[in-house]
Image (cartoon, rainbow, N blue to C red; front, side, top):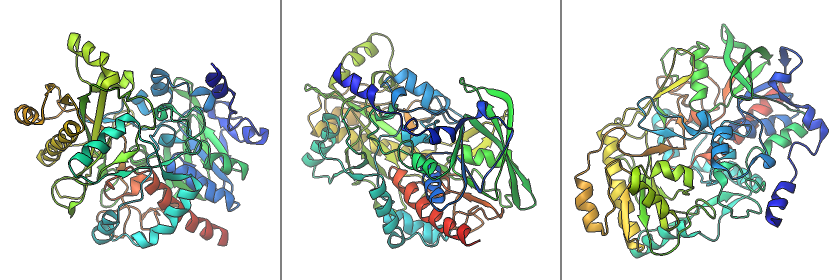
Length: 535
């Protein structure tokens, strides 16, 4: 009870200063239907929060617009049902058009930074080299990016996490038995209580998300936050955005009749790699080469489950602390689809879906959750002509549709990943291993796994494939045949629009993307702030 009372006693980051509260506005309560600023930032995740802090510190009047609700410490109760409904896009039910890939994305003030698992990696050098050669991205070499990574690592307290829980220790132990290299994951936390419920919002403010770092700082420097405001479209005249049309949403995520027009000389789009392209499509933004929403990447992710005699408790402790890139760069940036190995936490509600069972067998599997381990393989898409990713289109109501064709190239990577994960789990002492496949069975040895796995058919929807990393759709680079924003993330065909989020990545990056977004946006927003101050 003492711990519970301490958690509830932690102050709301927005309640400490009445001036901040006045600049934090529910769109339904805005007393006018017009609002102006020097800079409008659409979205408050990794890109929006980072750019808001930098531009507000530069003395600019910043307006942040967020579709989702404002939630904070006292709302984070480590309750799956409530968290998925309150904090995720489509209540954690977002998926590709054919249902083949489930997509987890945040939908709240702070975006996905509020619900991610805190893993923070620098962009791999081979990825940056590939962007430079293929997409003519300038100024983003490994050497160029080092100071920006360092700046954001310091700002967000990013450091390797010491002390893997049992779930992560399985990956470490299996790799060591097979002489596979592994490393420790850096996390953006300060004073972490090691609770393990990062995906439901941090109840102690230890996670250094935008909710508790850059957004409050931007507010302290005079920025305004307008939340529960859905940006319907950008108002465009010639080559300039003249206004941002918003609709206020009620507490049930439904549109109201309240329309708001926001105006500023400069617009930053930071709505993410699905909602951002969808907004551009709804706005009929100029796109002479038809590139908006093309090459959207998901790091398609597959899972392997293992049962141990020992207690794993996969729902406790830092969700991710160990990884292996052994299978990631064996052929360089190109070649067969490669993958990074990590582990996911297994909380009961999500696990009941991931275990893909029913009836008595499913009940038995769930009863053994405390002794169950999971491993994931994060597939690095976008580096081969057979890996073009998804395209974003619009449904009749203007909401985004994510069409991600699952082809033989992808399934080849999926099959190799399953085998790698199973071998590591058995090496770590697993008694049984099962692929996350509709017809997957529990196997009691790696040899029997290989034989049984070979008989499985791999097609859309019979493998459990997920994604928590959405990238691309508004690619950056000087090659206009492939890209819609330049190397400074300014939109090629509009004079006053910049895109500051993961949608500008020309490919996936091969690792958890939050630090890559922070560093790139820190670099680009700093340059933009200098430009605007000199105007």
